[in-house]
Amino acid sequence: MIMFNHRDRGYATLHKIILLCSIFLWFWVSLDIWERLNFSLINLPWNYALVAISGLAVATFGSLQQYGLFFIKNGWGRIRESLLKANFQIALIAFFVFASYFATKDNETSRKFLIFYISTSWPMLAFLNFALPGIFKRVIGFELLDRKSLIIGDSQSIDQLNSWVKRYVQKGYSFEGTFTTDSCKPTSTELVWLGNVEVLGGYLEKNKIHQIILLPNNTMENWISTVSDMGAKFGCRILVYNNLCGFFESRLVFVEESGRQFFSLQNEPLESPFNKMIKRIFDLIICVPTLIVLLPLFMFVIKIFQIFQSPGPLFFTQERVGLGGLPFTIYKFRSMVHDVEGIRDEAEQAKLGDKRIFRFGAFMRRFSIDEIPQFFNVLRGDMSLVGPRPYLAKHDFLFNKDYKSYKIRQFVKPGVTGPAQCRGLRGEFTDPELVKRRIELDFNYVGNWTIWLDCEIVFRTIFQVLFPPKSAY
Image (cartoon, rainbow, N blue to C red; front, side, top):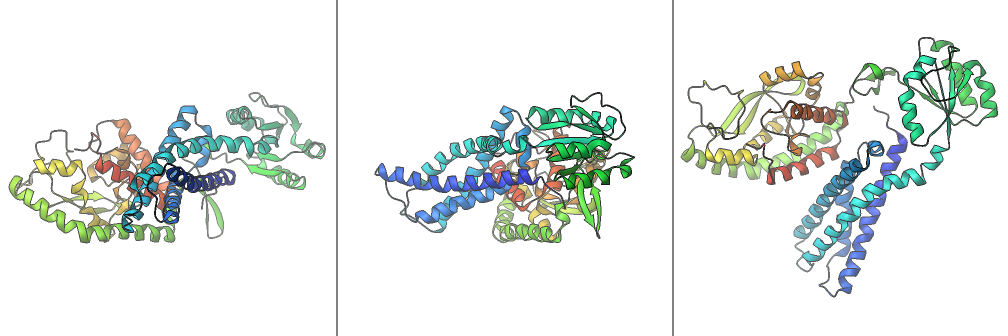
């Protein structure tokens, strides 16, 4: 279990509600504009209005994760994130609206109106994504800025927290000063030293303090319970600083096991049996129809091209590293010339203009058609639809040497697509920085999985398949 910042989660909820209300109201405004221009009328207006907000609801749950990170970005970073969110949100709205249009066989509704509504919704979403966080900070955040805080700990711990204090002071948060447990004055902080912790009670009687931040140290058994009780007596919110986080690069996650509380170095949402069940159902809903409808057709077409261009087996199999570091056999449509003698090094990655790839094989690789048989791996349970891509054991060994905590990505099943691939980071390992970026995205996926994130990755992947990057060869 991970404890989120309730304030940022509340901001995210308000953000979603305002977006949903805005897109719903804008539908009726757009309809009124359309009718005033004497264009053709729309049939089933309530259907499209509700479908539009349904698409946005799915998009916002997938694109408003870690809402608090938005506040610490600079202006261009906020603009970029706002535009990316708007792009994803409008793509899902368009998908839902036109899926409903074709599903209901609604020939009376003007497609031009639907395009008008969707295209005019994009700038509104982009503006709201950018403006709402700032509005929340100014309207709701003022009450937080006026609340006064104290920091209590030894002088050395307070000095080490100086950079964090400066960031919050610059944002307008109010720190009244510090009390120390070792009778020494902090030297690095600009905050007022109010004395030893023994005089804290008298200070709290005369001053209204909202929050006390405690910095644990090796003498905390002498003072921490007394101070926390005193803070509770005077109605102060108590925050205990996690001083273990300085020893680790990853964020510590609060977990509870058999009634005892621990910190973990990795949040693992997919440790939940319920989350595993939801992810498995999602996999089967997409993979089973694909295997039944598309796989036989592709098998027939690809085999014909193979007969004429590169005779040999239809499928290519290879051992990859999966969940928990265990090997499994991955299936693909064969896109390279068949290695009859079996002497080719299969660990050698495909390069641009690689002579091992036959003509139609290059087409398959560019548009990821060769990956379709991996849906059978999903059906078997070796893989999931979404997850970190599985590598060869040889590559896995090298990455494990070069990248600390690399094997965290093996906490979940490998995927047909993944958080890196849906962003165009695929193909040959040519740039160490891009490889590092891939692995970081995999780490983030393991620690922040939601079913909405899987949906987002699937939709991003569809775009990557239709418009493949230059690295797709």
